[in-house]
Length: 254
Image (cartoon, rainbow, N blue to C red; front, top):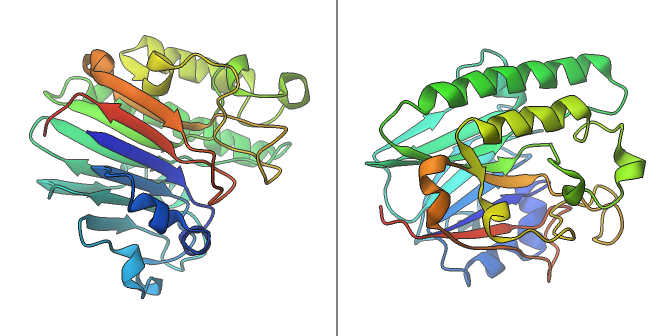
């Protein structure tokens, strides 16, 4: 089973840059797209609704920010939108496709500008709520794969210039500790299960890949899927946004 996760910086711009043309060659079972920056009703072209997929959106009402979508080759039993975190569901975004024994989620976590204490506090509050949620669902009789732009780089291996970014939101000590605690509590960073290279970045906040790379785009899986991870790669040959698609293969049958 192949899952592609991609933070688009606006899905219409990513489409102009060739994302859907590339996607048609990938034979993915799921495609999780974050940061749509438009509403579903703005997407008039069939390009955004490939025939081989069932497409589901959780977008911003005014279409100006956020938004996530999940494309499922196999029809899900149910679709869940939001995490029930009150107004955080509008600040971040989450959509989940449920199957008999597996749920695949698409997450866009809130971000914070450097030095903006209010935004950083909100981001921290969101992660506290998310931690509690992820601990609760561990008791369910199913496995979880949560893909997305988490707006956190976990370790020094996930940031190209650690000195430059040591005090930047997304690489703060408390954010990295939160990810430590998550991965110690019954979850796994799927990409790091099969790739420990230090130069594997998925986001370049300055624009084109080069300097100042970060790895903030994760597929986090419940521990029961740890040994189902077969393959992982970050696609960098073409640039569809400031983020690169993350491709993961799992030895799983729905």
